[in-house]
Image 1: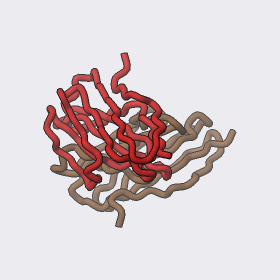
Image 2 (image 1 turned 90 degrees about the vertical axis):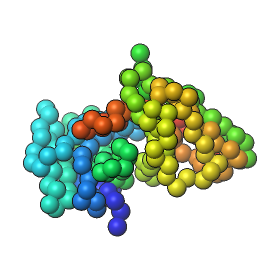
Image 3 (image 1 turned 120 degrees about the horizontal axis):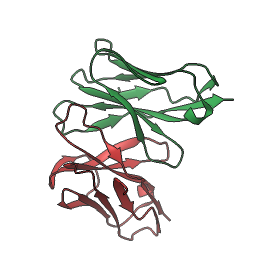
Image 4 (image 1 turned 180 degrees about the vertical axis):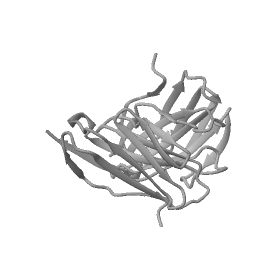
Amino acid sequence: QKEVEQNSGPLSVPEGAIASLNCTYSDRGSQSFFWYRQYSGKSPELIMFIYSNGDKEDGRFTAQLNKASQYVSLLIRDSQPSDSATYLCAVNMLNQGGKLIFGQGTELSVKP
Amino acid sequence: DTAVSQTPKYLVTQMGNDKSIKCEQNLGHDTMYWYKQDSKKFLKIMFSYNNKELIINETVPNRFSPKSPDKAHLNLHINSLELGDSAVYFCASSHLGTAANVLTFGAGSRLTVL
């Protein structure tokens, strides 16, 4: 089992819709969870992180964490064509020197 | 002005050669990382240094040798390059010990081995 799993996509949504990206992880000792966005040919940039169960909202983005079920998700409301990118889920493992384990990424395409 | 800067941005070289990539951060972070992103976009950690001390050393061929002269710099030297080393190498930094340990990435160095 992969440590961090995401659907590779591509996920296609129309402009203005809600995009839902999911991620599961295997290590119950994981502490904090991150969503990065990566445009083609660019470096990953942080969207948001979460470390408590529940929802965390930042503008059009909402991260949801359920430690019992070992999943974390990202909702993008009012999706825009500029949101088209690969979204990387990353998990910070307990007592592993800050190591971030990344999923394989989900490619999102927002159609005008 | 750039937070995490890597040089060079592109390297094209022949198999068997040796190459180095340099990284510098001006964020005051105490921890720096090298990640490798392959053609399938999978981002995998290679090494991490905290205050010049190696703290993460994943299963990486010993042809790869990182060096951190101080906590603001982390270099990666690769000996005897192979075709499979072709990838984008990202440097990142963070402040270890914070609740979130957010990584800030450099722009990447695209290595092509012919």
